[in-house]
Every structure is written in C-alpha cells, then in structure tokens.
Image (cartoon, rainbow, N blue to C red; front, side, top):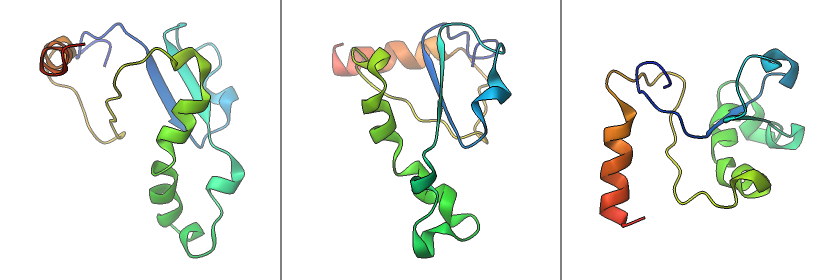
Length: 101
C-alpha cells in the first residue's frame, strides 16, 4: 500500500498473529490490532478456515473499539491476497468526491 499504492494515511492491521510479530516493523500510521480468543472460537465456526471467515465479520467491532480511529470517515477493507498495482490516492480521491468527505 505504501510503495505501490503511494498511500501515507492510517492503516489498521487486524491480525490473529501475536502482536510481537509486528513490534518495530511499522511507523505510527499503522495500528496493529490483534484478535480476541473468543472471536476465533465459536462452535461450528471454529473449524479450519471458517474461524477466519467469522473473524472478518468482527472487523467493524474492532475498529469501533480503537479510539485512535474515532475520526475515521470511511474504511477500505483489503484482504491479504489483494495487491495494489497503482497509486491508492486516486481511489481515495474518488471515494472522497463521491461521498463529499
């Protein structure tokens, strides 16, 4: 996102990996949020890949709990397998114009 997408704004990295994995890796514009154990364990949805699909459904709850994001106007969700090939700023400008932010 930074290099290819030329994006310099805030990024929230929502992960199930231990937070120590990202210690000292990012600048202050990257907020690393780790999952709660209960969001990964829920009967049928705790098997295999389903636990990660369920985890994705909690993203807005996690963002709502992150006080540093209180002034965020919109959220662009990007899964790890989605890659940037052009400047992200064009997309941001387009969304801002459409929603008059």
